[in-house]
Length: 209
Length: 105
Image 1: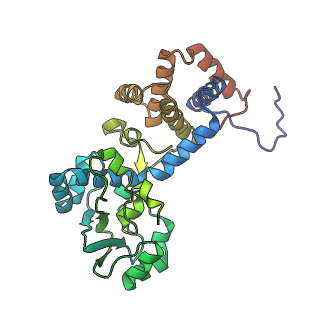
Image 2: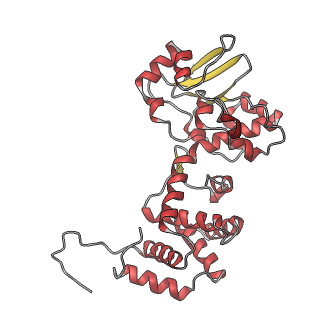
Image 3: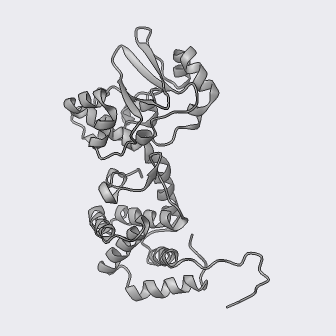
């Protein structure tokens, strides 16, 4: 083993816990139970996709449980906490429900206020100046750019978030999901549905458009 | 492959550390420990609930930071299942601590 101190990048010895994590991963790879690439993938997937799942779970519960939906619309933070999701004090969460003739969408015209306890971090476009200004001025046009074309008879309500009040959209449950479990339902509720720039779709039917 | 609800919604003391609703790993090994435990369960090496129960038990011992408890839970489950031996793990960890092996992450 070399103790060559001329190395520019003399590696630092891992801490005991780090060494143990390295040991476990290398042993599991050697035993053929997993590959490091699979670990990379799963870590990155959970890092990026886990945020909006909290909101999806709230939506799915509201779809199957009428009294829960009423509580959610009346007091967002309390209803979210019922599901074991932590919600910071001092910020209001207002859940706005889509109806056959009313579509809701959220924006923050001043900065990038966002219901992150239920949706995770906002997408880049949500923070972009064009989205923030145009969603208020011409919501139908912006929604069309998101591939969401609303018939004229559907009104669009744009909710401007602030540091005190955050909004989340409760989308309509799509037809054809009768008898689905809550988990199945949560699986079709995407972040964009809860921002209001998309509607939940059943995967098998979505290809046609 | 998609995010598993039973992983995402660990509750109470066992809840995953988050910031702004997203997972936080304060060092790369924490992410690796997370990934190993989730992946092994997905690959059928054990039932997720068996891991969760050990995690809750490790956290209840107090002291340790969240992902240290997580790694302890994973290691004890793998030892119990005979997937790895204690000797194997400690020898391998020593090799890493002495910089005798190239890190896998």
